[in-house]
Amino acid sequence: MKTKFRFSILLLAFFLVFSYTGSTVYAARLPGGNLSYMQRGSSVKELQSALNKLGYKISADGIYGPGTRSAVLAFQKKHSSLKNDGLYGPSTRAVMEKTLSDISKKPHKSEEASHDKEKDKPKAEAIRLPGRTLKYLEKSSDVKDLQIVLRKLGYKLSLDGSYGPGTRSAVLNFQKRHSNLKNNGIYDINTRTALLESLKNGLPSDTAKGKIAYLTFDDGPSKTNTPKILKILDDYNIKATFFVLGSMAEKQPSILKTIHEKGHSIGNHSYSHRYDYLYSKVNNFLGELDKTDRVLKNILGKDFNTTLLRFPGGSSGNNKANFRKAAMDKGYRNYDWNALNGDSEAAHVSSKKLIARLKETARGQKELVVLMHDTYGKETTVETLPQIIEYLKAQGYEFRALNE
Image (cartoon, rainbow, N blue to C red; front, side, top):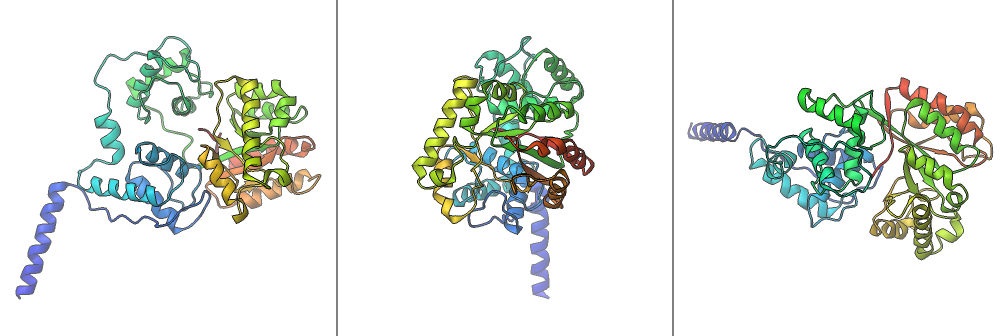
């Protein structure tokens, strides 16, 4: 009888504490080891659940794809003790556990709410938006005014007055929510009008949520195929990612500029693509990344920067572990793929086989990073691209470019 009475008292005490705090106690379950990009499994799902608890709205699909990586990177940027690489490891786990523990002591406040909406929330003030076009990497009070408005609309940005990758991505996401706006990440008068309207009536739903396909093209730019691919992407209003070779960019600077001007993402794919040279020494590999980076800056301007990287042949395997670490230490974010059209699996692949290969490798995945090529000899890739886009659209995918 005494035991039952004590148990009842304990239950009552727990209920009172629960009612007072207004929040549940979060039992943190976080993986203890490192997680790799594109890894699948219950460990990734546990990480995703924790990130959602922290306010990052991502799919808990158990795949460490671009969405999860971006959320981890955003979390790391909020903590000066962590390396900003988008990779989950023991250090990130420790800080995340502490943050989750702190949340359980603060009713109804996730890290996102307490940090972004309380501590750093701009004080009430008259809305000011620039009446001119803002340039990428511009630093000014006008950019800060734009960032304040984007913050009011829920975009998590630092108010540093710099039109960097974060601000550009927020503007691009905003534009994608408005069918009358050009999706280029550039703030202009039309975007200003839509921002003012959204401040009054609220932000439209994000049509890019759900199934996402990142179309990527390697080994270009080429004079024959890249312009045709750009035309098709324009026709469908799709932004893609081009992992370019420095040696090819030198030969086709005007096409590289067109890729950039149309708002597509550009990544580093080495200078020569020669496996025997690249992977014989880490210094050879890094040297080619630097060489290609210089080529890109010479063509696109000294202010151009990219942290996007794709290893020629992919980055998997223990023999490339040192190369992966070296690239990460230089600030690169490596992207392999989880779907492809198979256009590099033979000298010439028929259109029918390309489409079949895409369907086969894309099946059952919510987030796709699709490998294709825009170099010479890939004419069937150009021919089948509209069909591939139509197929993915029919499967419910929205299209995005990999970004900073």
